[in-house]
Length: 79
Image (cartoon, rainbow, N blue to C red; front, side, top):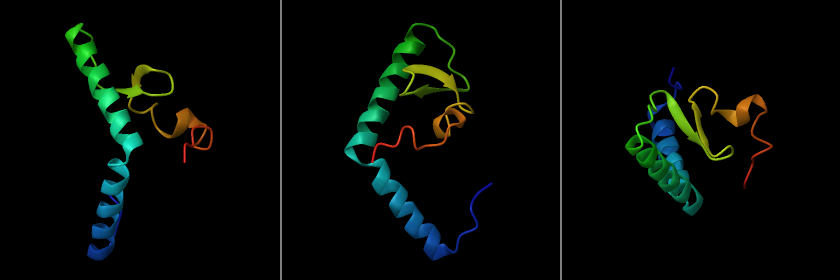
């Protein structure tokens, strides 16, 4: 369910999200995820519904790979 934002707020959020996604740390994480995913697919692993988790260094369900595995985000806060 998308957030209910005004057009101006939606535009500002889009800019903030893009700026965050382009930080050096996020770019490095994305590149690592893409490489791991390509390698796993080459080995024949079925990755449907799975995300790469940078904390456990493995593929886990999309549902489980949100907000620190139910422990919130303080444990893995890297700012």
